[in-house]
Length: 307
Length: 307
Image 1 (spheres, rainbow over the protein chains, first blue to last red):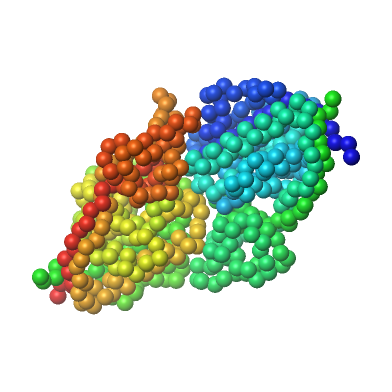
Image 2 (image 1 turned 135 degrees about the vertical axis):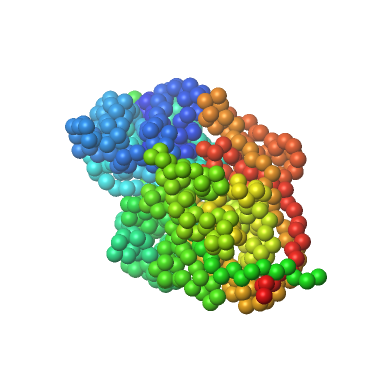
């Protein structure tokens, strides 16, 4: 079968600090800017500190979560005096790196994130994309010392709210566990390696290499589960020790998921699914204790440059 | 040798949320309040959420670090319109639980904290105190599944800036690693056990038991080390992977302590000391990458109730 062809991926953006207290991306972007990385072989590289005010404050955001501001609706909403800082900033970033959905948009946007969950290295995709899944397959084949996983959020592109949806292709690199406001050398090196491998892959792709197809697994987000709460909204239970740190370990009906402060165990009900973002700090306010996913296998076609 | 005698320890305060994003203490105090724990045997128990505004915001503090506000000078400073929230709150807490240094002060104040450093369970003391070191020895003898350590900050009481210095006796329980804004079941249970064991010890002490003396080890804070920084104050290196998570592992001259973003290793210089609070989130702004301590052995006298 003939390979599927894609145009060259010549313009890449690497962003960090979309959440100002996720420090790996902040420091990788700053170091790339210090080293004046703007061209690597056939690829031009734009580095962006996405939320500078939140980064200075070492907080996730100042007024609203920037990484929920990139839907078509919010990107085209009129700016008024009461528009939150992050919605203005989203429109600035869309002007710089997009506009989303246009020919002018960067070819690939990589947004760097951390989680307090024990998720290892994950690539998060808004929707299926053979080219970025090939990059995932490549990173996975090279970084063999740790699990490298793909997560698909499965939203239509217009509703996709994350920064990476502004690029023609895009994904988030999500690595944990790392506390907010802390920078760990091991995680810094992991993310830097994944970014470097992506750029290496792009060189090979742009030079005309054919990448053989094959099977890849991805976790498809299915639903989310909130903490048990009292009538005032205060949580009454914590993630059970048997679930804590066990992201991507299949959760079966009857497995413990919460332990209440009074000592009762709450068990998982319903179908077998894979938990992820277990006990992510930023999701307490979003009413998410963990997400659940199905695991699916995709058969990738071979791909090469359209000439 | 005759045991050293102390008066009964009848009034205990347990505080949490002194730092609003250290959730173990917040939830332990809330649960004790929900269970209406105010008297256990011979001991009256006061539970306090120390910084409610910071707890609501899930931040360490609103205007200034509350746990640096309990020096004699700050507790007696006049309140003006520009006095930060936390300094006002410190004076309120001092009125409720102290006044510091007075006969009216609670007999024992236990303040609950978390750290992002891999410190296990530590009891932190402002100064040497046979009674609280006996509590430490008791907790250590009962909690054998994890290291339990004592840290002494070694400040004169009038300069002691932490909340626990308001009690006649006092210590902080510091447990990690736990990210700020995250609650882990294992750490919740660890701290709850340490609080319960303290109250059990007090029952035995108040009932007239003699506690045999013996040797205990404590880490005596000696100095702190900042991150390497550029002229703008931005950090240029991260804790070295060989030091990360290795709190209390003796650091010898030549051992790696930092890894710069450009890949260079910085080694420890000077005497052999024990690192702790390695990569604590809140200390980036305090210009502390880690503390260093000497380890000393103390010979405790036997103690019993003064009758």
